[in-house]
Length: 97
Image 1 (spheres, rainbow, N blue to C red):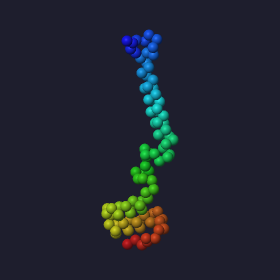
Image 2: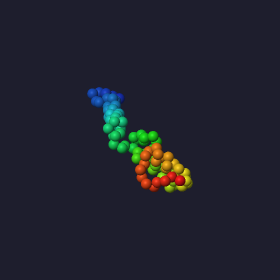
Image 3: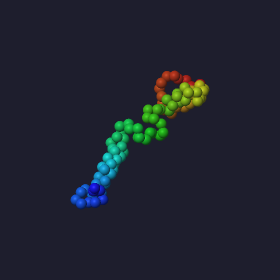
Image 4: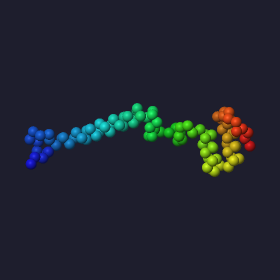
């Protein structure tokens, strides 16, 4: 019985290197694609801007905090008036308390 250790014209023990080589090539290709091409397509590993999901404005966050009960109505209107001044929102729920 011949084993891989006896090279007598056979492939030799280095044949085990090829699956490892292909695994490294595939892993490298996936890594390169993740860091370059797929990054701009909304991939889940893309870092978020300033720790919040894209599209969440400060006014939306304030509304969510009010809806969950973290802040009361007076605090909501007070903060909303500051955000209106800062971001120039022209929507019409209007006057701050």
